Length: 344
Image (tube, rainbow, N blue to C red; front, side, top):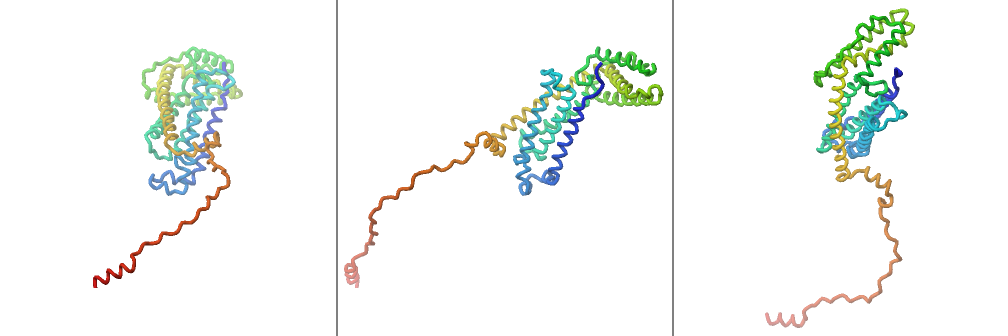
């Protein structure tokens, strides 16, 4: 039987994501009015050159969001191809997957400045929103699917074996037999409710589980012989109740997880394709400061302005004899006098 102590990574990534998003909001709070201005009046805002999508801040947000989107895929690599224990549990990697997805969504939202102008940018933005929404739904399904504390999926026989082990330990600790009266042989239900119906049933089952755990806590704390061992009994009994519910709704939960995974995967592929084309068009058509920065970073000689060639001292042209100015041609004064005399 596995250790019932949960890993600390999910809590760590949760607070890290909250801090990063909060830092971005605090930094941009003085300029919050810019994001609500019409497109025609944003150019006169004093910080337009910084906050616009291709500005220093806007493009940095977009670069960070894009980087986190591709880092987000490392969860799939760890889950399907790399099975090394010291890299961390799948539950920790799922927490990292959720963290990078949420922070990337916030960065892309700030990069867009709440204004959609191009077709590729619009497609990438709405694909991101759909992926975030389905991701949050998937995180809810993931938390209720049959998994070990390390995040690996549990088969039905493994759940049955765990329930037997939990019951033996609880009986040794002195749990009364009344606690097991409804858990001796849980019925495995079918999966014919559909996606929405299964989500509603999952939410209802979650409420039922919380009521059962609350009654269990009350039973342990009010029984003198169990109260002294409450710190050992309660985690084990909570896990027993949770896995008992997994067993009764095993096929329903697995079907729900499979349908969600198919939908989420294809929308994510559409998102990555739209983002890749958006970046390609932006670098080909746009005059981005980030492009000039990397050119200066990797090719400083090519990016530097060409220096004028140093030549020898200029040679003075040879001296020439100045040409006389042309004399204007005038009519002879005598001929002009004779012509006037004839006319008189």
